[in-house]
Length: 165
Image (cartoon, rainbow, N blue to C red; front, side):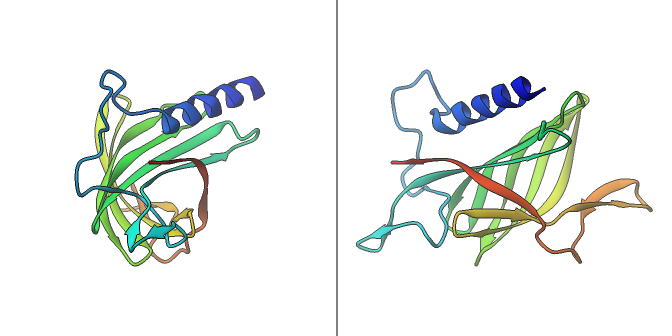
């Protein structure tokens, strides 16, 4: 199991440090885009240093359950990728689309699980290169998961790889 966790961590490291379009030698950042940054990101002449932020969370008996997040911020618009990979269970892989205000990110996660497309509203807090998320709870009426708005930001992610451009 430890080998599986190490291999998974290495793959996530490679994914966060590699260009998303490997067939093109051109930069994929569109003019006006700024990759996600926190208040601790350096600035030069009031122009933020562009940095890519990747986050990783492991949990379970031997830290074998993994969630990875990559974020891109353009003004107050947030996009990204979030993959939840529980050990020997069905994963959820999809995209994030939302807004960034202050240190709070409100996003819709559109993902595939067991061949079905689904969505969840998620709440994150980005502060000093640290990402935290409000946990999910089961809604007894709908039978679906939803963000527990009364809970704190208790799911903490570690900064995985930072690539500066």
